Image 1 (cartoon, rainbow, N blue to C red):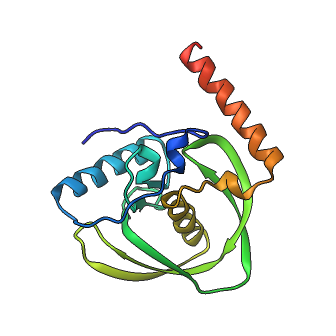
Image 2: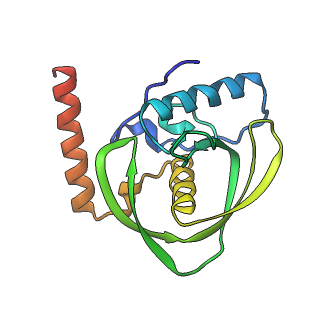
Length: 170
């Protein structure tokens, strides 16, 4: 397994949508394993392939405190089960250090393939539903900062660009 580089906003590669996965094989499972290693090392609860510069419709998630409930979503299709939104604080490994409250549907249903290529359907609510929607947005080239005002988004972008310049010595 290998730890992958997590792209950070405003990297334009984060805007590239994922492509449908045509075949679930050992090569894809190796990518999935690398993604879990990367997510756990970064202390995250979800990670989309597009965040590590892999343009595939694939994301992973594990909300358990002991890292014992890994979930894999390949080619996910999401359906909202509630109209009323709930507000949750969201952060992102690609937007480190920033958290904002966003409204999203509180209950959803997901249809996807698992790490073995088997179709599954599952309902999620609360934080799990938010995480699934957040990671799925990445597959469309969308970040949680896109839901914020232009002023907030620009402020976050400028702070992250400054941090990135300082860390690279430029």
